Length: 165
Image 1 (cartoon, rainbow, N blue to C red):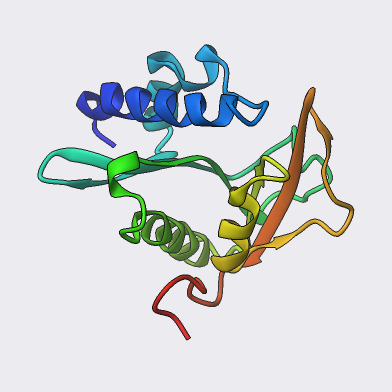
Image 2 (cartoon, helix red, strand yellow):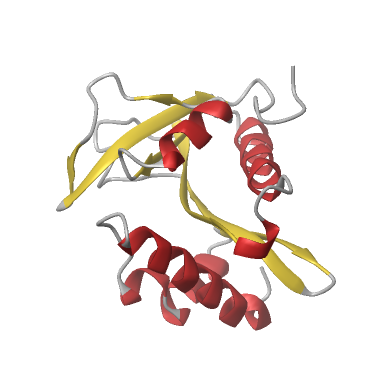
């Protein structure tokens, strides 16, 4: 992502964090601020989907996640973080397109799994299941002081979202 797009990313993530706060979870200001997002962009970890200059969705894609997946070996998976879709763009396939993009990136790196963590007992779990993810059979747990559920999906298949067989 271009540095000029960072303010749009921060605004989108703040909006998503406001929604998440109603479910007892939120990203910290440091997690979603311009400095953090600029660092992700500098490391080529920040991706987005725009239409006519308007950011519709974004995510961070990392090669390791020592907090939520500490037992993973290097190169075992890519880790999807801070996936957010603008409220006005929800239901238009933006999230699905972002996840498919992340899967293609994982395949190019010859990584077999895409992993994420999300808020348990929210519609997000069902959404990610529709997108081909499966929940950790151990259920939600405390990761870095946050109650989250881990999910993963093989990257070899397209998402199972709307319009897919």
